Length: 264
Picture 1 (cartoon, rainbow, N blue to C red):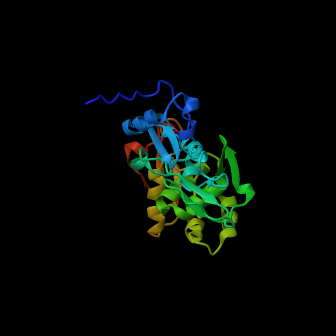
Picture 2 (picture 1 turned 120 degrees about the vertical axis):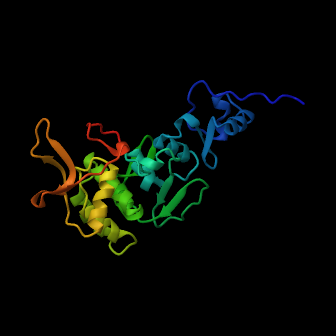
Picture 3 (picture 1 turned 90 degrees about the vertical axis):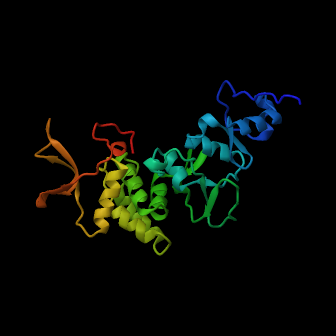
């Protein structure tokens, strides 16, 4: 029985490509089939391939999809949030595949593409920005879409994080969400935007605060210094200073009290 040649991983990271791009990369279809089988290359959407070392990069995933999706498709929701630097998958799912979601204006026929979720909705030119050669929704539009369509705990965590990074202004979002009044998810979005706290330092704190709000507690203050902000003082996640009551969300993977801004 003849031996099947071992497929080697590429020595350098390959850019996103299609099967028709193989000759320009010095590769062939036999190599691609073997590389996909070996896990060195992934097909992120039908007809678009990506070096496995880039599959955690949301912009690279979007750039690969741009090779085959119609140019009018604008990356939105979770995909756009990740390109803007906010991971909506949450700490327990942050190793799952990067979601690929796109939006086309309501006047266009919605394309269907295996590996991508494409939605149809009104889309103004000022809600679109180009990043790395890919069209994505702006931070404002991304925040409003996430507020409408993500689960409430994750939506609030994303909104808090975007406000903390200065990507959105909750007061502006409250005005803009009324542009979609009566549409699906707007009531949820309005409620969540009203309770955005740029001071929240982790997803866990956002989730905890929403549990309290949903249970009927008054809106708490966040990041409370006891007795006051100074060296050696204690800082509480949230509470009601007038009532001298406070709460803490404990969880090592969510903690940012050491000052690191990269965690969730």
